[in-house]
Length: 281
Image 1 (spheres, rainbow, N blue to C red):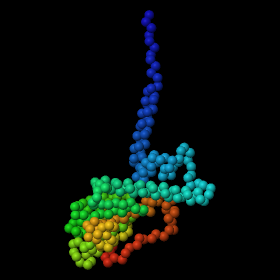
Image 2: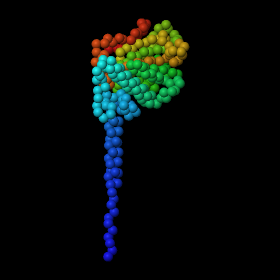
Image 3: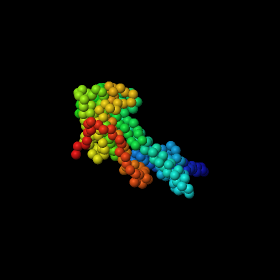
Image 4: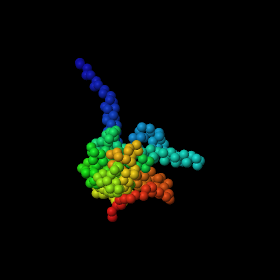
């Protein structure tokens, strides 16, 4: 009689494949969840995976949680505070660089372009955005105070960025020497102040709260760019200084609000000007 063959034993290969599938799905869900978080969390998460044992996040190192500030000596506490401040400053600078890069991408501009119409510098407390009124890509119509279509596009995106991140704004207008269009003695003051105030009106029109704008000033041709002659077209510009608000800083670092409590706030020095544009009520 023919003998029936025993059924082949398939083993547990399917279990391994299923475990890999479940792991991949979990990783996908984690990536989707992290991508939906705030931009500061994304930056902190990225830095954590680059260097997990020196992460800027207030998390744990290894398996067991620990308190990095808990020490037995005052010197250790001071060092912990310095490390915390340095870590928060690193996160802030990374965040500001990301915001600047995103703004360049919104305007489809090359950051390394020599005669770029916009220049963004990361400062100790925020961003300095310089808008140039160049002949190839003018910011204003006929050397006046009305924005061109390009100027409106720039101001609209700038207003969106300021409103999204809650920056405090100061606006400075500058002209070259001699002032365009009129050669009158006060033409530079009128033009620089008018352009700065036009930038203020445009920001408020698109998105920015009036209370976020702290100062609007016209400097005429008294502050040319370093290394540029007073007659250079590069001096035809509007500079916006964007500073992180106290609310944004306390959201990023809850200890910052406590440490700054009771500290006097000093306004930046402003030179006396012949013409200064003030926000209209």
